[in-house]
Amino acid sequence: MNGTAALLRLFARRDRVILPLWVLAIGLVPLLYAVSFEGLYPTAADRQAFYEATAHTPAELALVGPIFGDDLGALVTWRSGILLTLVPLAALLTVVRHTRAEEDTGRTELVGSTAIGRRAGLCAAMALATTGVVLTAAIAATALAASGFPVGGSVAFGLSIAAVGVVFVGVSAVAAQVGSNARAARGYAISVLAAAFVLRAVGVAGASGTSGSSGTLSWLSPIGWSSQVRPFADERWWVLVLPAAAATVAAGLAFALALRRDLGAGLVAVRDGKPSTSMQGVFGLAWRAQRGTLLAWTVGLAVIAAVLGSAADSVQGQLGESAAIGDALSKFGGSSLVDSFLATALSILGIGAAAMSISSVLCVHADEESSIAEVVLAGSVGRTRWLVSTLVFALGGPAVAMTVVGFAAGVPYGMSVGDVRSVLPGVLAGAVSQLPAVWVLTASGIVLFGFVPRFSAAVWGLLAVFVMLGQVGTVVGLPQLVLDLSPFTHLPHLPGGAVEVVPLVWLVAVSAVGLVAGVVAFEHRDLRG
Image (tube, rainbow, N blue to C red; front, side, top):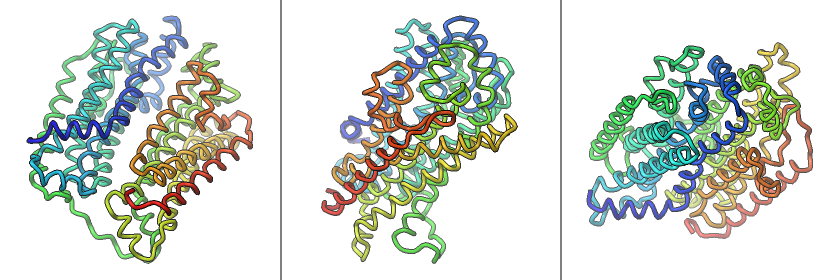
């Protein structure tokens, strides 16, 4: 463990922007939900109606989580169920970034040649991620308690967030030992997170309408364990023993595995690919490197879209007749409550497509850091051609994904109302119309990569700012001048809204200029400059 404290300080300094950003952005979300619910459902009767309708909507319970009561705190806990996925995701990305990603670039070997213990890097990475998880939970609990919510429920809420986050700190540490590189390690860890989400979702959906039940399968999922703590609804403190035990076992396993593998290698060896002549050259290389990630993003977004589309027809009964609700959703567009719900859902899925594009763009930065780019560019491949080979998938991948999303949401919704032909075009148009804003994020990532590559990951922070402006700023009433900073603000609100071509043209033009500027800048700078 020698040198753990020094490495922890180093990792904290390198994450001095990213870590506080996700800690604050996620930690304050429950408070925003509390303000929204208090305004939208001011009376006990309104909250009771919402609770009863939600408890009998399997699709929404599967997506968000179980709901255990009509108390304001219980409703906020239910709506904040997405945090039980976001916090583990942020934690696992942090651990992998400071473990396997460091090995891929050769920095771990360089640092390890000094008086640094073999376990120090892994321990420091896990400590940093755990600190971020604990701070996020503390901010969320403190914000709710300071707003007048019961202290016991607020503490239980914070512990439920911290519990699932710490479990996936351990899971990602194990994945970092198993994967052959950082990309594989992230894939393994995210796959476990996805499996936990699916188990919780299936368990909750199967138990919908049953008071106080979350389904048997939920007990097989760390996300389900945190849901079973039941903040503000007869808290179950003993459930926290399960994630504590799982996190301890995972951490111990990670340290044991770290001593059984060679530096730079994983316990799962890299397999040689099958010979193929279908796609050769640099574009074929980009396709083979990204096809798995693009497919996973597309399938994930499509599944969420199908859930939202199947729940759209029941949204009127769930949200009730509150004028405040209608006014809030009308800000997101649509000529009816259902149209507004779908427009809001598609805008959220558009943010997912933007994240998909960003992850694709950052692959070139990872290849440059790991010297793969240097090997490729040492041959006859030019810089522009190499970068464009990734841009094809960074731009085209979200286009394919959002087209699939349009069908995945539109067909179930059309079937529920008995008229697929009339509703599908509007939903499909709403999904595809997200692309100009997505491409602005793609261009932003390329600009950062071209001009200041070491800050390429800052594009995630830019996406977080746009999310806060679009999903929260509209409801809390930020000035329009501030809202206009997000490209998603300028998109048409479909289905049901009007389409203005000029803003879309401007977004595409800005994206094109950014892409060209980033490519040109990359042509004229040094590698790893």
